Figure 1 (cartoon, one colour):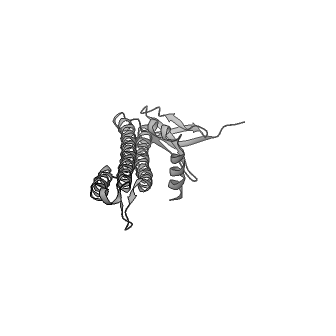
Figure 2 (cartoon, rainbow, N blue to C red; figure 1 turned 180 degrees about the vertical axis):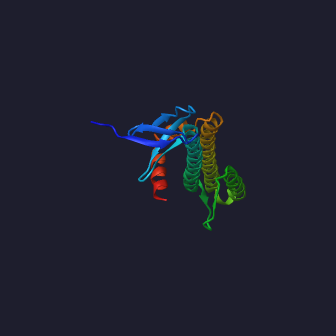
Figure 3 (spheres, rainbow, N blue to C red; figure 1 turned 60 degrees about the vertical axis):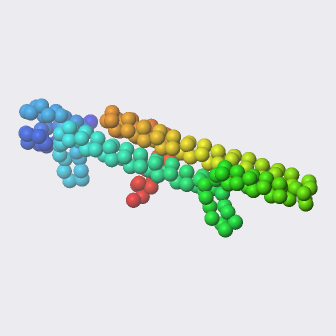
Length: 196
C-alpha cells in the first residue's frame, strides 16, 4: 500500500513541506515550528500548534464558564421549587417564609383568651392553650426546615462556585469539564447546546 504525499506550506514561514496524507502534526524543517495539519474538502493547510492550543483553551474557558453558570441556574431553580413547598400560605392565599414568631403570637393569644374565658369556659380554656402550644411548635418546625434547606442551597452554590474558581485560578478548565461530564445535568446541557 502506497502512502500519498501532499505538498503544503508551513503556516509560520511559508516553506514548502512534503508530508504523508495521514499525518496530523508536523515540524517544519526550516523554522522548526510545530504545526497541526488541517484538512478540509478542497484544501490542506497548516497552523501553528500554539494557535490551535490557544483556541482550544479559549473554548474550554468559555465552555467551563457556561457550564458553571448553568449549574448555578440549575441550583437556583431547584431551590425555588423546594422553597415553594416550604412556604406557608395565609387565609388569603399569600405565601410567606415560615416564622416561629407567628406561632408565638398564636400561643400568647390563646393564653390570653384562656385566662379571660377560664371562668366561663372551664376546661375549654386549657384547650386554647394546647392549640397555641401546638401552633407554636408546628411553626417553629417549619421555620427550622426552611432555614436548613436554605443553608443547604447556599452551601451548594458555594461548592459550585469554589470548584469553578479553583479551575479558573489553576487554569484547569479541561479538568473541571471532565468532572462535570459525569453528571446527567452536563449531558443534558451539552444536548441542548448542540440544538442551538
